[in-house]
Length: 266
Image 1 (cartoon, rainbow, N blue to C red):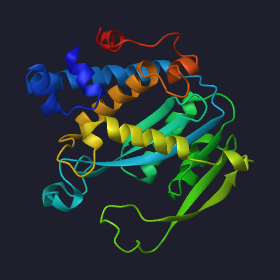
Image 2: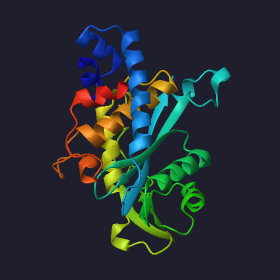
Image 3: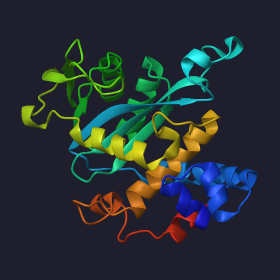
């Protein structure tokens, strides 16, 4: 239980070893088993969602090594270098409805949209960022049964004088592109999913920037994301909602304790 508590609070594998005294191989085996159980639970139970507004974004990480340091024999292989996680959140319940870990490519964008479409009922308003892989992926998954828009962010070409190397460029304006159906202009936004991805980055050590904490294997990345998502949906009380996203979405009638999360292993 202490190991799971440490992992869901954002501790790295090494720090969890130091805090609990449990060996690293044992923790990694638990990560794999619980991650698979969480993924299976999500696939089985996060269905028939009555979402109205869904926001989609991608969050970057890397496995094994950064792109520039990947050995030649592994160049271009998934799991070596850049790894992206597509996330889709219900803007009303804050439920993380779907995710997929892979490349920022047309293939994974299509797989992600097909998965999202299989989980929702009725027509939704869907907002994504400006990634050019989305229009075809949305069309293939939803057809005409969606109100789809993209939110394009335009940044300044140059940073201001004296700005740090890692500071973000200045955002100058948004462009809202209506792509399909009749999306409500005021609801074309990715603010909730971007905030959720920030929480994800702050609460999973393997996503933290400018550190030596990263996933050495793609499988570990996928397992870590699955555990985080179930904990986020079912165990963590959202500060605005004052209940968990799963409770707000009608998937649960109480806040899960960690024991219930671990019980998914049974």
